[in-house]
Image 1 (cartoon, rainbow, N blue to C red):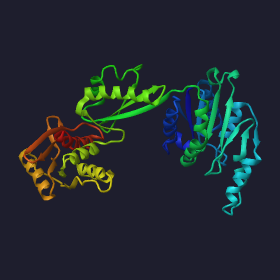
Image 2 (cartoon, one colour):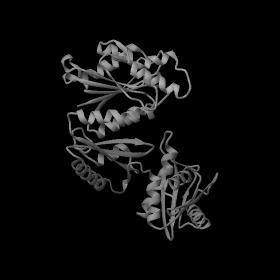
Image 3 (cartoon, helix red, strand yellow):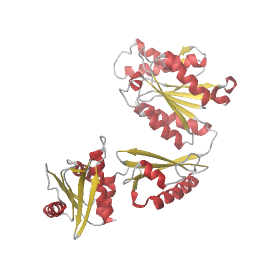
Image 4 (cartoon, rainbow, N blue to C red):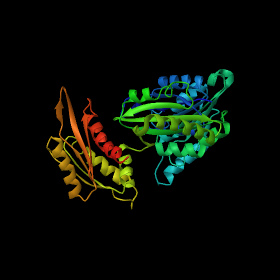
Length: 400
């Protein structure tokens, strides 16, 4: 059983709004063991909608769509479903009563346009919406007509409002799919977070793992110099999934070593914070070249930690200029630690030329130990973010 997700709305195709519904639904379908093969986004026209649904319903067995169920003239999803199934739209008096009751409890008169929300293709079923006026729609398309690649297709349409869509999914659609899906396999994911090497370099360090056909699959993505490795395992049960993931994770950690700093939603600053706390230490920073990014990231990590946990970040100074030579930066790191009663001092010097490129010096001081690195600034808009993360990661590296 394969699935496709369709997101409907001019606001999506024009880029005015980000489609988070499809991301959420993909995860939910994966948890049910139903692979999502396609994401489609279509505008609010009848022609585009019919094309998108017809293509989807021909090649997969489950289509989940969001949007286009409102009362206005551009909400055409119910018309699309009628065209797709070759059925007429019929008014459901029961659905109309429910919609009207939502206005009456607010002592408001229901606009005539809301009657459209009680129209359903003949033979379809409504999906109750406890939080809004737009009920969902379920349409079954028969295998005998070639739908679902000859296996039949079920189309679920839910409102585009995320809160309404998610509740309707949880209370209705997911239960139906659990009962009806042919595959009993389960899918689980695990993300490992890496820093300190580029995407292509990490891929070279993992020969064979990030290739099509590997079981489990390992995907790789990069965002602001942080590399995410996503392990995805299919198996007959949860325990078998876990065994596959654990074995692959062990291989990755063995190959990459300290490049792997965390998992799931961990950021570099969270890993450094954990290392500082594990060492019963604390940190203060002083920076010029990174313009306050180091202090901001450490402050965010401190804010994410649970109330009552050991304080690890004592504060940061951001100066318009710092001495450029290393001995003076070492003294600056020691001074900021001393003035903030911290056991670790971190200093980031000014941006300076190095040949045809630019660099910043990073100094980490703890007791009598000094770690000094020269961070070469890359190009693009993430150069400063990468430099700040590199400085923070040096703290983690020193403590490890």
